[in-house]
Image (cartoon, rainbow, N blue to C red):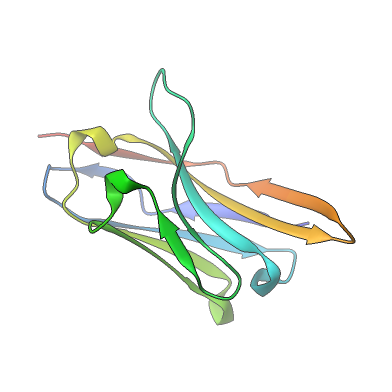
Amino acid sequence: QVQLVESGGGLVQPGGSLRLSCVASGSIFSVYDMAWYRQAPGKQRELVAGITRRGRTNSADSVKGRFAISRDNAKNTLYLQMNSLVPEDTAVYYCNAVTSILGTPHNYWGQGTQVTVSS
């Protein structure tokens, strides 16, 4: 089992930047595919960006060119660099870890960190 703790959220003006971090503990971080999701009030949780255990990345069209996901396996940490933020990016951002053990999927979530983009 893995525990995930996000940090780095806050209030930022439109056009600003934030870097989210997610520290994992309790398991071998490098075997997990990782992702950032977000959930805005009244909306469903959506995938923001993902990175496989081999480092392959993907991201939602709405954040392409503005957000970048990365991981440091030596530090058991997942990052999300967010630039050119807009009010529509306001949401709670969640860290997600997924792996498969003997064919059984294991899916873990952090508690979330609030990002608010407002002037």
